[in-house]
Image 1: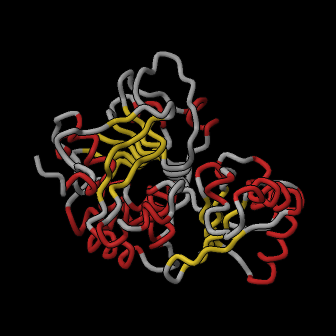
Image 2: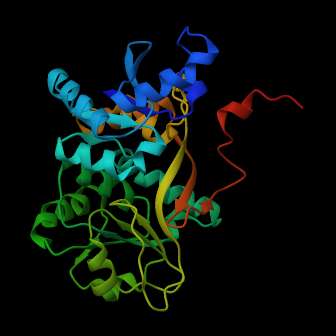
Length: 312
């Protein structure tokens, strides 16, 4: 994993350069113009710090990416909002960590968190899951969720993919899954909807939500325009950084904590292994975010670990 940070504050970027103060501004501008960057070692991880994103800088990053065979990168928040850098990453087949992979693994926690915020019981709820592409990870995650609720509807246009899972869950746990392609009927009875991979168009044109229902959008950060729907569109989350990684929140200043944690545990392995690691780390959701950036939080639980040591 390679970490890249945009630091366009001259004093911060030049803090490790032992040069006279009178020369800092001149050297900083020269480095920006020539596409120069600095390399920081954080334990066994490399963080490339760039003062500016321009054509020269991107060309040099491309050369370095090809030499070192970069595949996955974790970047600072300001680079996540830089269209030129994101285009560069896409054109060079670089996977930019965005927290979506982790959000999917923590979908069941998001469901539980919402019921805590609303002071409801999960076992009394009817939920709907929107999913067209079923893989092993998705299958395990759906099983985990459906066994905790009263009614679980699977809305999909690939019903045959889910038949084996439907039979397995019924014979093993006695739970009936309602698998259907009738998006409107089931969704109108669901107070909570989990979207794994439906597109914006599918959500707006094919689906009909109950007035106050809550949508957990795991696919991407997308705004949904629907008449009469007044519920929440949850598109992201903030994690309470596990204790073993807490020191890195300062070392990687300017990085989103959820995305940073994702970069630490991201790997190509089984769902079982990732779940085990999340459990051992005691990874917890601190709060959820809707599409407008508004927090959905339970003030009674999940105090940040940075506050745990405060004595009043």
